[in-house]
Image (cartoon, rainbow, N blue to C red; front, side, top):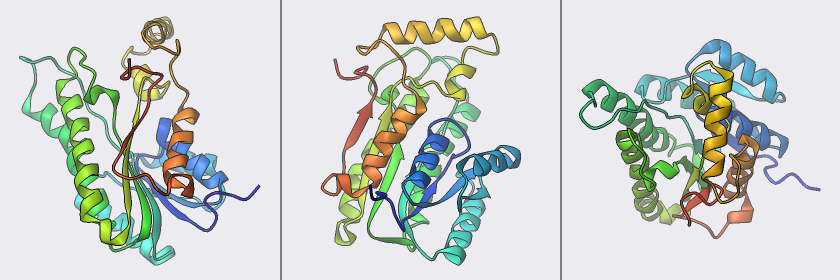
Length: 251
């Protein structure tokens, strides 16, 4: 069977753990040369080893312009182009209205909105015509949860980005789509319950009970959706938000 991403160059930000790492592995397995970013060098090195092949790690914080410039300078020097950009880096903390701080707002919007905006904009000179750009959204953008208002609003902004950028880039036929996972068993999700394994399992069980499919996702399942959006299988798909959420936001 032919590799779906043969001879493609893919950049995955936030590629050291969870969905980003699973997707980077899948892209590499499908023939792509993959560049990943992470903020911590030790985790970056470990992820590159796990991906194998020709994977390259670049230490970078997507909210810092100098880091993005350094990332794309290396991609340009090594390959001269980008076929697939998965703007996956993000995060943030959760505080209820009344407790929200300027620091929390700046951190969350810096990582999820500013970082994504400039990750894509600074990639434009390297993106080939008909490239695929994927933004990591979240069901939190449309499903209300206590203390998630800032995070949810930051992810909702990405849906608007995808719509507008689809038009901005239509002459180059660059496809821009949002991939919005539901609850997924990642280190970031487990951290919400702290280090107590019993608390983590209880949280996962509670989340699973609220989903139509009755379970949380594995990162590989979200990677499969990312592969669809990255490959020619989705050649006529642009401007959409694809929910891989076990039905959480759909029923």
